[in-house]
Length: 163
Image 1 (tube, rainbow, N blue to C red):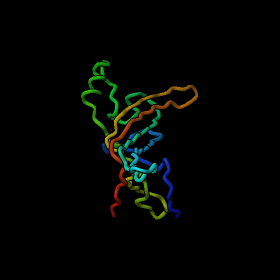
Image 2 (image 1 turned 90 degrees about the vertical axis):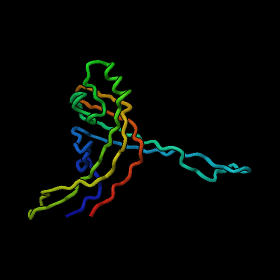
Image 3 (image 1 turned 45 degrees about the vertical axis):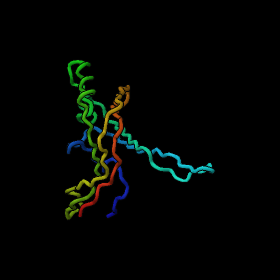
Image 4 (image 1 turned 180 degrees about the vertical axis):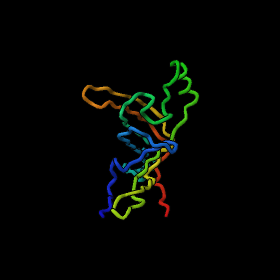
């Protein structure tokens, strides 16, 4: 049996607080390190490029059902009675979330060569995710989509494999 090495969308599981996020169709993470220049007197050349800041950004696309049923659970609660309550909650009670990304792999194969159990191996964790942008589109002749994006405040660390 061939061992799959490439990560594909059907092998991905995205979770928040242990709950699988349904209807997600894409997730992207980008990390940027901003560096400074160190030059000594008498030269125009850099002698060092130290890291000064980190920025992590994330973006998720979902199949759109409605604003309450799609997106990352708890990230953007719009089920309120007024815009004042929504604003106060965002300003005074914003709670960042962690997004966990897992890769499905084979746990158990039966005598007929069928996968009967899978395991979820940790692939990445986006820690302290904040929502910066939300959009949705409804287009004739297409499946509607919902998009959320923002920043995360800690570098992605690859989970250690347990044996």
